[in-house]
Image 1: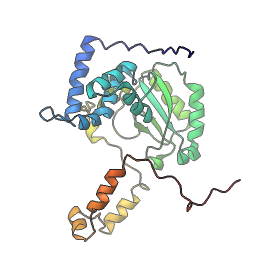
Image 2 (image 1 turned 90 degrees about the vertical axis):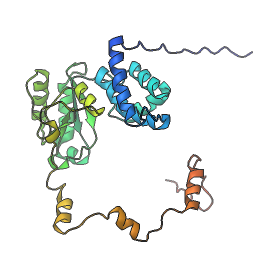
Image 3 (image 1 turned 45 degrees about the vertical axis):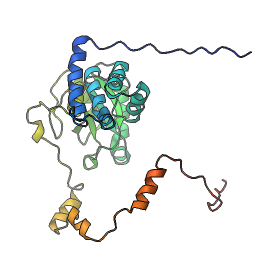
Image 4 (image 1 turned 90 degrees about the horizontal axis):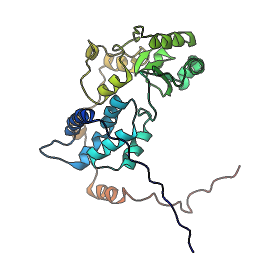
Length: 275
């Protein structure tokens, strides 16, 4: 006789309060309309709105909450599992509540060599994980290697940091002392940043024109190209070059095999050598 199997179904998360839900619904419709216009709805295209919708949820909750997952799923006709799969794939979506300031330390190769590891170690000792103001995290390269080691606060740059300057930066954030990024726009809270990333207007004074500038080394290739009149070919130039477009047979073959698993290895594949 087979044993009984008991499934423990999770409790549905509490919904947003009515006033919050009304506001978020309006914002969600505006986001989805960028991909699937109301006068010509396209459910498949509407799913592209999931990434900004997750930012919208974070602007409300400070992370991708269970309630936020249900909200996104409902608006896009997805399952909670599908939304969770996407939100857990990208590190920019937080799985735990985040403080007012998300402090990210780059420890990729160049930043690590220049002191990023030491900064991370210092801040791990300096930042209380339960601090409601500051949340510490590791971030991948932010294309600011000219200014290594780099610390990001809500995705704004703080260049050429040291353990001492990073600790002082965190102390200023905790005490609500005005902090000015090395370059780029002024600092705002994590939830305000998330609303901007959801695609809504940046209300910070002068933010639109305050973009950070890359360093000289990063721009060397662009500078060389301009000095020598080098440009990428235009679409017309590519079309007139005689390059053969993808043939119908190739296109059909690609379409029929796109959802199939890769073929198994054959005898022509050299066997792996042992240790």
